[in-house]
Length: 203
Image (cartoon, rainbow, N blue to C red; front, side, top):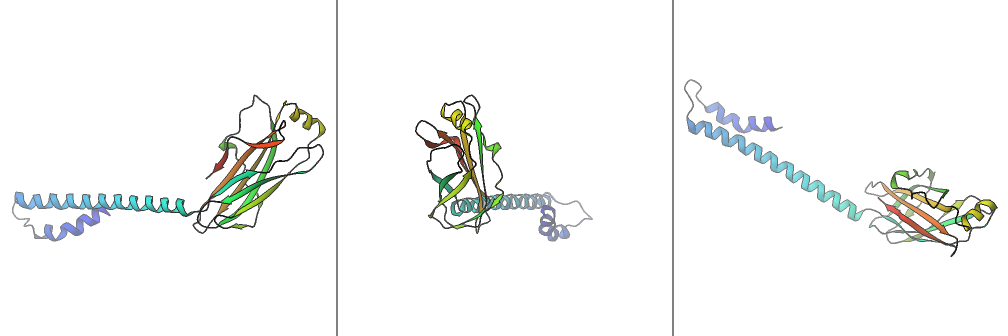
């Protein structure tokens, strides 16, 4: 592209040069200035394109759908009972969120175990048909498999922590690739659920 621009801009001038005699300093200076002009114009074009791309991405991030988990519904764990882990979602973006899929996992952590990181997020695999407009609240439930009496006792005596995760993927009219991930831990003393450290991810 740069070479083509150079040839187009300099061809008329180069054609006028008399190749049968040495070119004057002025003629070569004109060639140099023309080449410099092409480089500067090309560089300005690149800067303008990058600026426009950055502005376009900033506008997309401002307008896109963002699903935030605003609340976790508390429940007391009981042995041999199917529980529902329910979270309250809110689309805090400016366009409707179009759900793709969800997934929830349940596992135990010992007190000395590290908290899970973003690298351990499960890919949502269960389809969910839902469109959530901007500013609208929605309660989404996830089944938690029954716990044995032994597991409930281990949780209540703080031998292990009960962890439940909820992950939702979605898109919007801007073709955003959204994901919301929650890591929640059960507190047996108060029978409540709280968000684990760095356990609320939106991207």
